[in-house]
Amino acid sequence: MNSLMTTRIRPVMLAVAAVCALAPGLVQAQGFPDKPITFVVPFAAGSATDQLARAIGQAVTNDSKVTVVVDNKPGANSFIGAQVAAKAKPDGYTVFITTNTTQAANEHLFKKLPYDPVKDFAPLTALGRGGQIMVVNPALPVTNVSEFIALAKSKPGRLSFGSGSSSSRVAGELFKQMTGTYILNIPYKSNPPAVTDLLGGQIDMMITDMATGLPQVKAGKLKALGVSTKQRSPLAPELPTIAEAGVKGYEMTYWFAAYAPAGTPAEVTAKLSDMLAKAARSSSAAPFYQASGTEGFHQQPGRVAQVSGGRDAEMGPDHQRSGD
Image 1 (cartoon, rainbow, N blue to C red):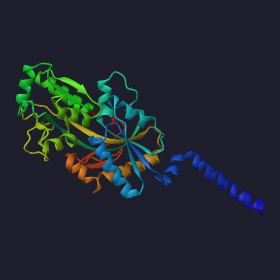
Image 2 (cartoon, rainbow, N blue to C red):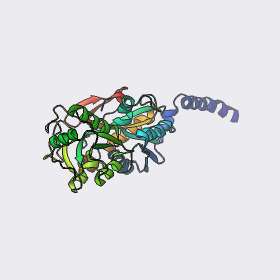
Image 3 (cartoon, helix red, strand yellow):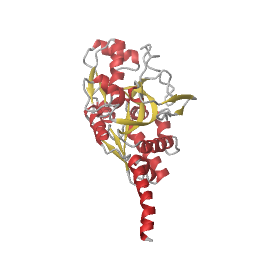
Image 4 (cartoon, one colour):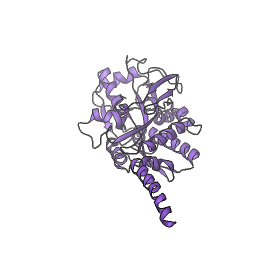
């Protein structure tokens, strides 16, 4: 009897073992997630990306009952956070919440990166896109973009702008190029410490994300001159676009997205993608999108996803190479 049972059970066990060997990701995904997930953010606490990560993380926790830990790794032009995420164990428990800074712009700003924005990551989903706001220290004797340009031209190299991300850096450099001004760039680990120095008068100007800059404007601590998008922001409709204010054709935007380390099983990335896209559309994440003026944009790999405004788009394998 025992011999007969063994004879019958053995093929079943071998079949199960074969399935496990052929599809480890499928087996892993069945119980996923069953422990805390870490969101690696390559910018400082208080940055727009950090605020988004915390909003999305709370929504994931509310839905799955799994704790999400936000791990800020700012510095070195966001290289530190990108490297930490790229080298993490590809099991689905590390998610990189980032922007076009690490995944698109850095490879055009630096000759060599310590990570590969395409090969080192598996795209999960886009999370949103937004515009920026041009702000100056209130002590600066200007009230609009044209006056700032005139002041900069009268003092070449004596005014400065801060940048804590590639979006803010490229926005400032584009402004310089289009206006024929020479304004010194002061790089920071992230936008919040740059805003702190702008408040203190150590730098003169920033073009930063709305989530970081607008609260300071509303508090009367910074002076806003314009927004970087084609249309005025509904959060500050009284502000002209920088293009309206005299720099014809000027436009700068950015996007947020989530990635897993390369090699994460497809079944796990699919589950993460669905979790994150659902979290981004949740009521608990809505306050971030509304307060920051971020447009909901939940595009997932190989899928057609609804974008605010009724447009559809597909997130393909070259998503990482998308521009700012």
